[in-house]
Image 1 (cartoon, one colour):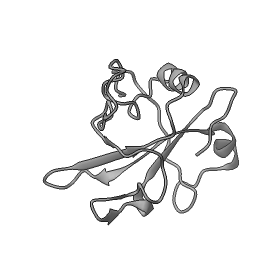
Image 2 (image 1 turned 120 degrees about the vertical axis):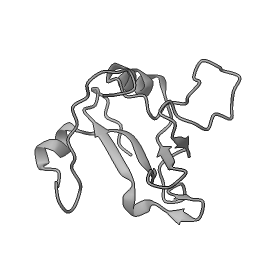
Image 3 (image 1 turned 135 degrees about the horizontal axis):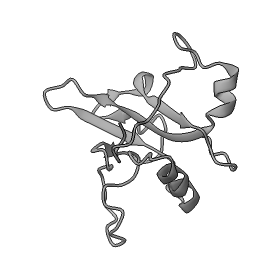
Image 4 (image 1 turned 135 degrees about the vertical axis):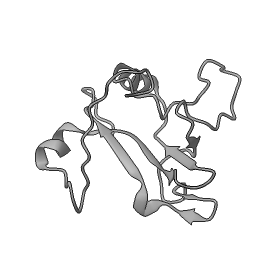
Length: 126
């Protein structure tokens, strides 16, 4: 179930180890949505999201796919420049890079869940 209460089919694949993505999947799922990381099992859970810039074309594709967890929580306020939470209550840390994978002294690099979707005609990669 996604943010809009729509059923969402997912497949778990990786670039190494169990569930390795096959060639067909790597050709089909080219649109990089975002990277999700953190620790949900702490007494005070932490969740982070990193993502490319939200261009109008990118926004349109993600909305048409019902994928909005990498969107700022209050996109309707154009004056607000300090949005820090996503619509799915993850802390937004900016672009996905090795510097942003380190939060509060913890390096989450090995555990980042990078989500790729079937893309529109113009493909966006991370």
